[in-house]
Image (tube, rainbow, N blue to C red):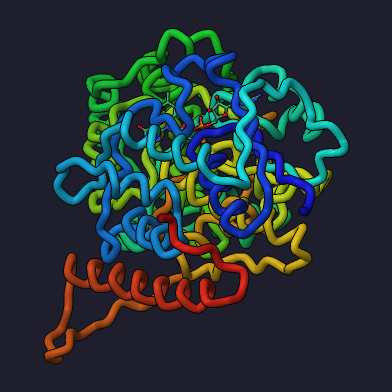
Length: 471
Ligand SMILES: Cc1cc2nc3c(=O)[nH]c(=O)nc-3n(C[C@H](O)[C@H](O)[C@H](O)COP(=O)(O)OP(=O)(O)OC[C@H]3O[C@@H](n4cnc5c(N)ncnc54)[C@H](O)[C@@H]3O)c2cc1C
């Protein structure tokens, strides 16, 4: 029998990784510290505990990227999805679950699997050198001792303990008749062209109205256990900056200097919101310096008052939370292995994906890739046209890191969304030859992306090293 895979953390990612590896015939030891040591948010000893909402979000595989990821996971024999389906509750188009039943199902199946051993103990440092095949899936609340050891291995700035997420907008929803492309002072920098930012201009009246809206908008607060986590002055939420003075943002992320609006060359903008390309595909654009703790609904309302963003579709909304995540695009290879020490794979939220489903999906891929190693097989990552592949490609290289981002790395956690997929032209006519426009066209584009993803996924799964469906 081959050497076991050691999986540290029996959460969403670790549980799925264990299932996939064991299904591939490789023995697994899951090291889970609960209930011996609890995190600030987990309440039970169960594996794959849902720490907050009981929803795995949309189950619409045709028009929603997370719904598509559900379907891909089902086809790949996911334990998490199978337990979700077995414990589902009425929730419209969403897959909501009975949380206790969900985690109990997963715990029972993993405990019953003949190739899986569960060890209830904290791993307090880097795994011993004789653990040759390790998956670290310790999540956003990785215990401090292990987090410190990982940080020593990766370098201080490469493991973050707080995320500072600025909203991300789909390029196709930005009004290009109002905005223009230009870097400040046309500077090209090491990798640019001098036209690397999308600029949204504001008049004085628009700026003052925006500040009023920002100050009046409702924000979420830090939880008690989050409040003690240090975060840098350089990533203050924009609403906090606005509270420090009405002009603060105009001297910070919204400064209008070095920019000239070709739509109105005689008028100097009073303030400018800049968006920077966020992924190599160029489909997603990040609102520079706009990390925020405003409620999601408020973000959409307030940010759509910005000229050029009136119809913005957000791939991700802003937030600031306690988290633990690696600068994965720099540190991990395409198989989620630490470049500096390839015996260590990472999975789940610690890789910089965001959400229960995404964490489990990355766990699924890590489990399969780790299982291929002792069997002497070459693991091919899923095609980037699938939801699995799009998410994996983003966290292992698809994100573009900004050069000057203080001491922090600019990579921030990401949900799965259609902006991560290689673009596809939406069909311009329906099957009856009628022209498709507006929202209908957007829907047609998502359907086309989903259909391509599932066809490519089936081809990938048909390759030899696939896992039997969860029973
Ligand atoms: C407060 C909070 C609320 C969230 N709410 C949602 C939500 O509503 N919806 C959503 O989609 N996502 C949510 N998330 C984000 C994320 O999806 C979840 O945290 C998800 O559980 C991540 O999965 P994971 O497997 O990476 O980590 P986890 O599920 O947290 O699993 C990690 C496991 O590792 C164990 N562990 C940690 N350190 C060690 C160690 N040294 N040795 C052994 N075991 C260890 C932990 O006990 C835990 O069981 C939330 C995150 C947080 C922090």
